[in-house]
Image 1 (cartoon, rainbow, N blue to C red):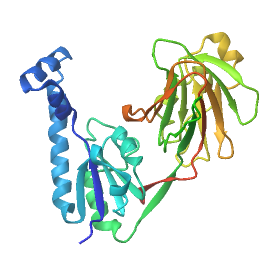
Image 2: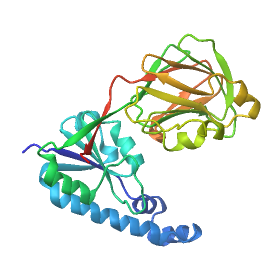
Image 3: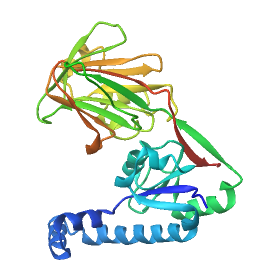
Image 4: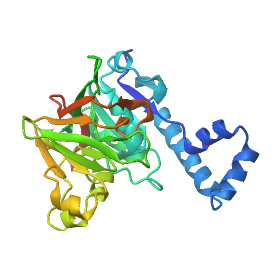
Amino acid sequence: MSKEFLVSIKRTKWERDLQKYGNVKELKKIYRLQNHIFQKVYSSHVRQLRALEKLQKKIYQISDFIYREELSIPKVSKYPFLISFGGDNHFIYTARFAQQCIIGINSDPITSKGSLLYFDTDSFLEFYEKDFERQNYTIEKWSMIEGIIDYPDQSKISTGKCISEVIIRNEFPDSMSRYLIRIDQEDWEEQKSTGLLLSTGAGSSGWFYNSLPYSIQIFENPIFSKDANFFKSIARELGFNRVQKYKFLYCTIYETQVLQIISEMDGMIVIDSHPECQLPFTPGTKANFFLSKEKLHVIQKLK
């Protein structure tokens, strides 16, 4: 029997830390130095394991479960539905591999808000039993960003699909980020900041929102819909004079437009805050960012 779901799971913080520090005694010592967080971390670990066991028990016959590092596009494409079981960051990572509809399940709603996740284990199982087979749900189509990076040696790299945010900054976080920026064929503008942050609607309620100067926040709501026909960018942490001067401080880039950036630094481009998605942005390198023609299809139960 062919399987309906591929479930992407992550290791809990307790599991990752235990692997890193080698044994429970050493890990508990580290946790004591972190304001005695053992109970908080281990309790979350237990809740996530119990939730996963409950999910596996109910849908094991129609599902395969793999850890996120086992994800690949050929593997994912064999299943009608992809499930992310974790938090927001895990969902964003898993969604990069989605070739079909994706479902986000919050593995521990007690400690994780999961603003991008529409289900926890109980609500998903209820949804599956009552509504899923009847297709009593909506499929949201979230906008994504794509980029093409042109290096001075004539090589090119695609950034792939960005679900939440793109970070463009100096390789050394304490150093100023320097670059040229423009939209389409407008005049180039040289900027100095701590870096550029590009955001989709899915990412607009998080780091992007908190990076905006207060002067922008009070005049408009910078949070926008996940299916918007644009993305936005902000140059972070500028001096007061530069806030008044820069034309491309805070930009909206529509689906027919291209945001162009030329590096004047030993920089990097990070897609969706994932260490696995860091690309060099060396001097003279040009990056073009645009709204992807593809959409992320996310299942949401009918309200």
